[in-house]
Image 1 (cartoon, one colour):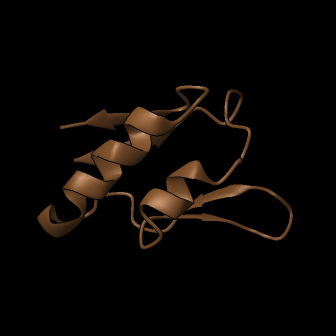
Image 2 (cartoon, rainbow, N blue to C red):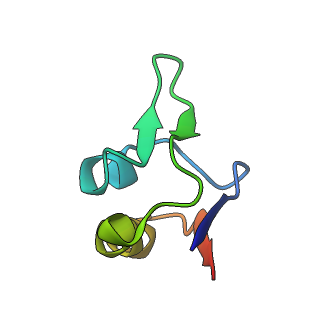
Length: 63
């Protein structure tokens, strides 16, 4: 699993960070940072939920 972000769509509203804080972080300048681009299997469920909940559909997963 690899995470892709469309930064043109991302609003950095931190929904993904709340769902998967080990993988996503919104910094002090309101920019989304992907902390782990290829998360381990133990994080897959929370990452999938973060992608599903993204209101702008700015997150995508590649297998």
